[in-house]
Length: 276
Image (cartoon, rainbow, N blue to C red):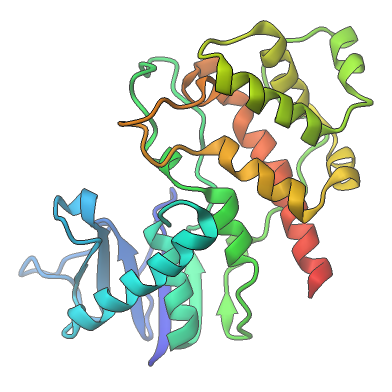
């Protein structure tokens, strides 16, 4: 058991090692002392592929690193079953420390990294974050029950009614979509993406509508079954082996994805609060 642990994710922003207890960082986002070693009470956890090793995780800065590594692997295997995807190191570590730490603080980690692609990124290049089921990870994170867990960035604000996003459809087309269930529209996009590898103007217009739609219509239609069915739409665990849905690698389409996921994640959050 650990007395006090601070987990610092890899989101943007400066960070400082906690003054009390252990601080955990990921993938060499670390601070070294004058001898080139990790500073005292700082643990770095790296996933295997990032470290260039066959093991799932590499733990540095801890005397009994092997024990922690084994615990991480056990948790990751359990989470994989719930996610239908290998979990992120951040979620694995948080779930484990939620069980083992008397007090746990989590910072710089919302479990919702951006899927927006840079205009110069080739379609053959994938975003590293695309390999994880982030909506599923948030689903699990929202179930963590520990009065000593402090994770403010996990809780999202309500999405704006009108996002400043490229609008690929006319006002008339937006009115055309308005009466329709957003989950039905997403399901239609998914079916189209399974059979077609190229962008479609109608689908881009649908994505634009969904990204700019009012959260109330999402909340009106949302339930756990529908939210679960949306999780596979936003990740590809093995992009180097299997083709990704075109909207995940298309520059314009990817500009809408974060706003859509925000709405789904917010519905997920509302439902989780109702179950408490």
